[in-house]
Image 1 (cartoon, one colour):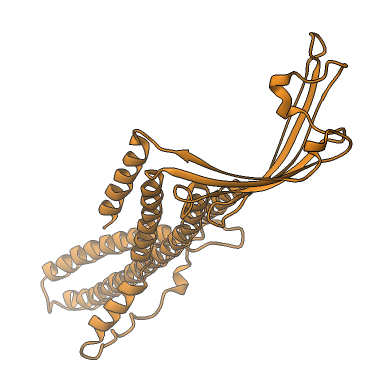
Image 2 (image 1 turned 135 degrees about the vertical axis):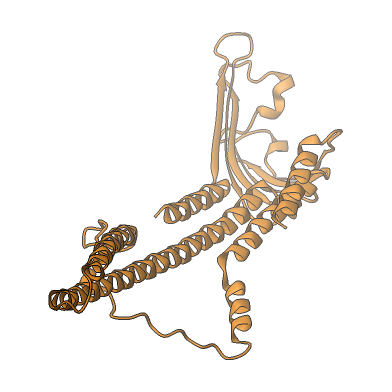
Length: 331
């Protein structure tokens, strides 16, 4: 059940990572009702991140006008729009840093691998539960067989006591023989008590894996004990080695470690990319609406480059070293 909850956590982490590609809406409005200039501006924009090389789409509306005849200040002339505002749309494409991989895509890849890790954890717990339940069952069966042996030995001593009593009464045997057999009976009664206690203890251990209709532990009834242990299976030559190899290949632990190592590879790839300079290409088109000066009426197409060069990048260096060290530990 705990392993199943880990899988629920992994699903939730994947949903959280996918949230990095949710659209965002930002709006900013300002007004200056007092002063020589009385500007009124409104800027609203919706951005949509995409997993395509880290490209980000954006579209928005802008309005800028004066509240009085003085209009907008000259130094804020770019904020002024035609009477119905301005529509704009564009795309921002990272060419180097955040292009091949970025934090959002790396988180999704790690979360997807995390679901695999969690599923393999469930499989591992199921195998362990089945193994432990099997061991508990056969320990209970063995305790039952020991109980049967102890009872048969006690019954044999009790039957022998009757015969010894007859012979002692006839004088065929000295009384010591029967006294010694009485000691054996008491000793074997102790063996039966010990065997019964061991059977009860193994039954309690088995009840952890044997549940009733409400899911509560159920003590197994001794009547369900088999009459004898099964004969051992004789494996053909070489079969044990082949089966051991096949079982090792199917074990979830190795695949789980491989998945965890893949997560560290994603983190190392991201850290290596974050060491690179950022060169972003931004292309946008805008169109003013309504009445206004002639220069603002035609559509405008703009393109630009944004360059961001880290002087020191210890954050990315540290993450890369940590990912490499964790991968080495997994290896």
